[in-house]
Image 1 (cartoon, rainbow, N blue to C red):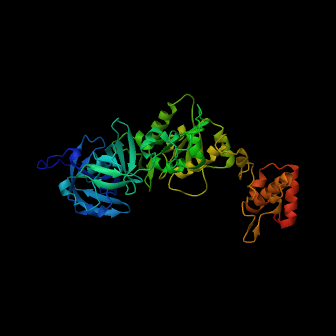
Image 2 (image 1 turned 180 degrees about the vertical axis):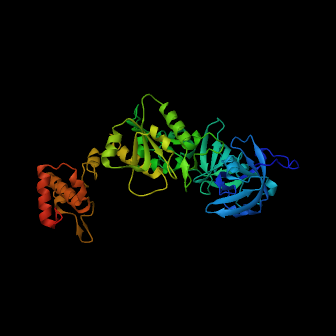
Image 3 (image 1 turned 45 degrees about the vertical axis):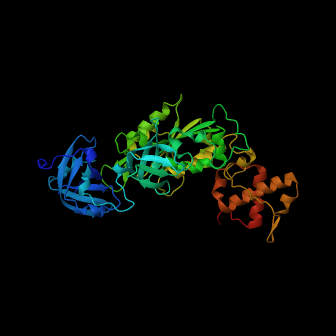
Length: 463
């Protein structure tokens, strides 16, 4: 049961509290709460004697006295004196745990309350005002600042020393040094900007096509992870020339609560968080409204089919694909109605779908006509024709006694072609003989394999 609040303790408004955690679920038969702490120092909460539970909509506030508090794995187990059963505690799932500022521990140098960061002016190192912090929220990757510009648009800044160089709540500002493009990710201006570090002073920008060959949308909770990767190399040029249209969407922008939650605990218990279905649905529906037609939606998932060259080739034939990047234990299974294809980059576990998505973008992008300057180099790549690539050499012809094969110095085009084809087959036999089970070989290639078997004694039948 829930007892009435102490009339001598007037209920504070939510904005008057410091939120130190969120109730995730009941724990045990005594009605303890499993609380996810929102502090780097959970032990500092051990001395708190009373707190306030605030509903997700912040329209209800309940005073609670803390009977006991103890650490359990990465959570706190708290027993409130007013709540004596798991059934009663279940009614407070996802309620925030707040304390009055006067009852919280004193901050040490370099520590800040999230609410103290909200409203601060964001200034770059040259003194230009970029906006104000509209919201400071905790996510799976740490604290994130949502900055609102003067025109009402927003962008996100991870609250880390690498980007936030000076933090001074007293003067009301944060001095930041942001990577090129971070402040424009929400507008997908990666396709508009020249790659970082390249000067246009002595070079006219390459002409842009009216319509890109393919559009790729990426949905992620870490949009800034894509910035440096897309500012260099052939993909940067492809974006600049509008061969590829790329848009990065922050999944948090589609959350419906003020803390921009994109995950919650799994039904049935167990460790790990599950990505919410609602933000995923909202993001895909918004993307679909961007243009006519229907995008091919790909979920980056360890349960998907292994990503291979033929998969990259198939995706490159589509004019619009969406890559959905999961985290933690993956998405709520109900998003499967949105998904056309699941892709895994291998039988191993990584922290999320962002790095696999980057691999897919790179592999698919290379298949788009004009992205790689020399088409022959793409066609000679490993796996393009089902085989590994032949060896490559460059100057000098003799390096520490190791010489380039004479045939490559001969200038005889036909002999060079045959050598490269045979060495491609040799590399495949040595490193990936399984590839030969599916590739179609012409008569010349079959003859070369017999020669290689004789030269190196390969046991083709495993005897």
